[in-house]
Image (tube, rainbow, N blue to C red):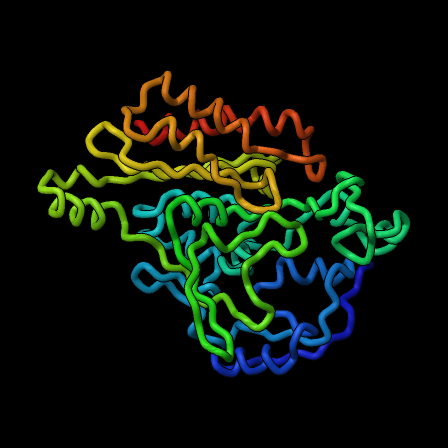
Length: 339
């Protein structure tokens, strides 16, 4: 049986107190929301914080208020929210696909955004990892995915991360020193160890979603002197995993298209679970931008998405097959947005 290491537990009553605790405890502390990722990691001795700062009592982190979702909001609360399902279906699909109903009733959206990167060699128990002299991500000197690599190649397996990047969400972070807001697209780093643009003393507080399609299209229609359909946007999420009921993604495709009639005004296509951070398929976006979504255009965009996807031998399925699946999933996502 794997047991948790000893730790001190602090339960702040508000965000200010949580930021104070985190600043005081320094790098020996970890934030605890749902614990669905942190506790298994602690049991496997990936992380051994001396202090856990529980966030369940911090009401500022909970709830869906207009276009803002508190980082401590349970995944199941988001899943049940009719407005999220109807106006942000890509985010709803991503949340609905995470793990199981039981774990969605424990895990939070902030926890999924900040999910630790994972790897076939890293996600083993302590004794197994010690037998191979550990790895670059924890106490070792070798990335066993690619032994010649100077960087850790653990993969980002968050379902919400590529969606938030694609739809243009923003993330608010708070520390004792103040607060800042960062685009979701700039929050992730392609490094399996230093995978977030978040300081150790910062708390992810909330997610700011873009205006929903109806509000956005109306505003753009007035500005352009055209019909309200001129600024319509749609987004979706497609996920590849071994088990349909629950599993981490081995590929995620998030796409957002802004339309002017039948023409794609703008496009954002992001790939998840094929690198240490969500990857933007820039050439695919350029292929569909400024043109109607014909079968030929979609096929071209799908082929171009193959290039930036560089899955490694660090998770389930063969890496070459996972890379091949990028074309099929991008094609399916774009075809869905055309209908």
